[in-house]
Amino acid sequence: MLKGRLALVTGSTSGIGLGIARALAQQGANLVLNGFGDADQIEALRRSLQAEFGVEVGHDGADLTRVDQIEAMVARAQGERGGIDILVNNAGIQFVSPIESFPVERWDAVIALNLSAVFHTVRCALPGMKARGWGRIINIASAHGLVASAEKVAYVAAKHGVVGITKVVALETARTAITCNAICPGWVLTPLVQKQIEARAASGGISEADARTGLLSEKQPSLEFVTPEQIGDLSVFLCSESAQQVRGASWSIDGGWTAQ
Ligand code: NAD
Image (cartoon, rainbow, N blue to C red):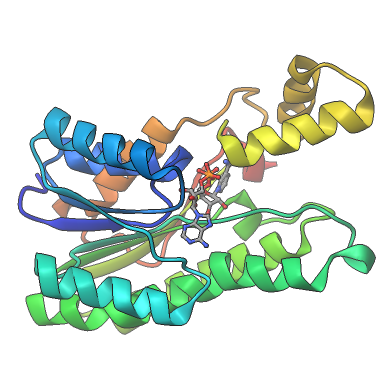
């Protein structure tokens, strides 16, 4: 379905981004991976995706908190690979603290990566999509793009902002074959959430298993984690022609979290 398309998935060396990259490659899309990690492991990942799906896979290690590096990454994709057809803004970080003690540098970092980077990648990639007459922009927001939790001020602000950016871009592209949508996952068991489970276990003096159950039962009525594969499949749908009129949506995949 996506043969010959080029997909840039930010933060795809781990977790949800990797799940989305795999799902898009399975449909024939060539990939630019992005994200941090051990260079040998990233190279092994790049080769294994290439071999498994028979697509071209590159890796761009741009630090998306840096505007110059975002601009250079999009320019490289344009110059070397013909331009980005599918942009998935997935890279993100979390920091948990009450607002009074929330470190200012953590606020700046979360806003730079989880919010400003989305503005910059879209700003830079959209002209190429318009020139080629087709595009898909998928922003990985969160249930926290729709509702709040205590002690996550930067994350919740950034994710609400991503939902806002998504709507604006959808309106600005409404009469084109480019769509822009957000996906709003609930809990997904990735390194980002594993850290929160460990912190919860340590502060409560409980086992990791109990911390995991506690985390789910507080927010996610299904009591089951969403998987990166499920988010990958939803991304594939949003890239399909059937989704041509899905525009500006904030699509929940959260085990019922935001239905409450
Ligand atoms: P993760 O920690 O497993 O992966 C994050 C990815 O971002 C990694 O590839 C990492 O290298 C990359 N990254 C970090 N800083 C970067 C930077 N400065 N520049 C470029 N890449 C950088 O996290 P995840 O749980 O897979 O989260 C992915 C996205 O999904 C995030 O936007 C997160 O907010 C969102 N999300 C996660 C959950 C969840 O429960 N895990 C729920 C809702 C939304």
